[in-house]
Amino acid sequence: MFRWREREPGVGPRFGVDWAITDRSGGVSAGSYASLNLGGHVHDDPVAVSRNRSRVARALDLESDDLQFMRQVHGCDVAVVGSGMPQPSQAADVMITDDPDVALVVLVADCTPVLLLDRTEGLAAVVHAGRVGFTTGVVEAALSAMGDRGARDLEAVVGPSVCPRCYEVPSDLREAAAAASPAAYSVSSTGTPAIDVAAGVVDQLQGAGVAVTWLPGCTREDDSLFSHRRDGVTGRFAGLIRLLPPEGAA
Image 1 (cartoon, one colour):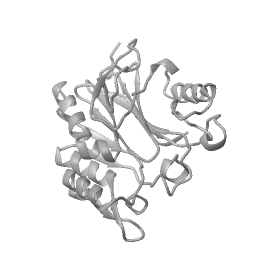
Image 2 (spheres, helix red, strand yellow):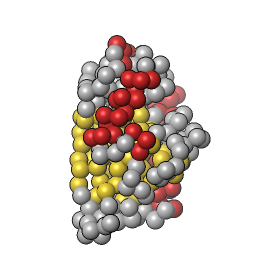
Image 3 (cartoon, one colour):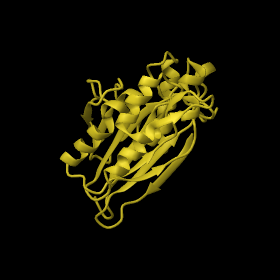
């Protein structure tokens, strides 16, 4: 179920965190979506998706309704959510909360999932950073929105995504990505223009003073992860983050 997970309780006045990256295992979906597809928009059986989400929620000590999803559109808009609030109705590729009773979810199948945390202020966020969002400023939008809410000491986990060996693009798209971050400029396995979105995201985060943990792996090369570029019709894995209350909090 989890490719990577860390659960760290709050210490003193600082918030803890339960954050994770899922993989394909441990679900009930079949065929191209096997088995832990969490995407409800990819034409999988809705009952199977619901059961998959319920399994992940239980692992986080939550109910299915406590998982907060975005309507991701490769943009830079931000949604702020909390317990008892409906799923964001507007399109958003950044979602923020200060509520330990929800878990934020970003869905991916080649794009770069980013989890953001400020343990002092008690703020968490997820970011959906595909090529378009990365080049048009979704990381900056997330950092700005977190800063507006008081975040000053951010750390990030950047999850697996398609690697530049497998992400051939026209040269003009590579130039656009390199304009957002020179670290994104790359070459594919066949020597053609390519983009390293994750490297560009990490460069932008580190340039803003964010401490980054970058998890290895290429979605196209790793069958344990969903990849649209590899399979076409496929499911979605997720990055998730839940705040945990400070030590001694009621």
